[in-house]
Length: 168
Image (cartoon, rainbow, N blue to C red; front, side, top):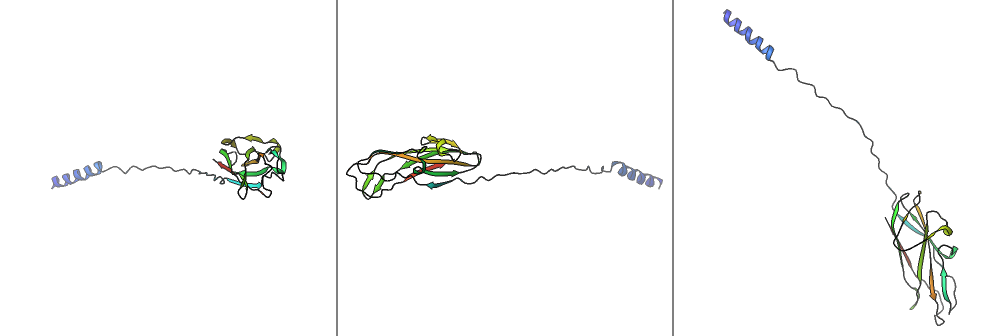
């Protein structure tokens, strides 16, 4: 019996010494991070004044409205985009100035400036890269030249279209 008691004591002692250690505690840490996003306004191009060659008489040669010095006769438009964004392309194309089936050819010219000051504008060539102001604006003025109005040109009101295209 002594033996059984001794054996039982030895088994209990063995289990108490060989018992698994207390489980290790896991550690973790967390931190927050701010996330920012600025959504830029979509680009808008608004015509604020049409190009006006005024009244001309038959037989007139070389009528020019300068986009920089043409004053109120020059067309005007405002580009609104993200502040200081680079506008990749400023391009334009035109149609003839027409009245019925009579067409008068013309060549457009465009100037631009980051401030709304026409006389300080720079003449652009189609495909120029320009940068909007820190407020996101870029101002455009349109002029052009009509080489001549032949003497046989029918009288009346003539209209045409200048298509301005801008893209990022």
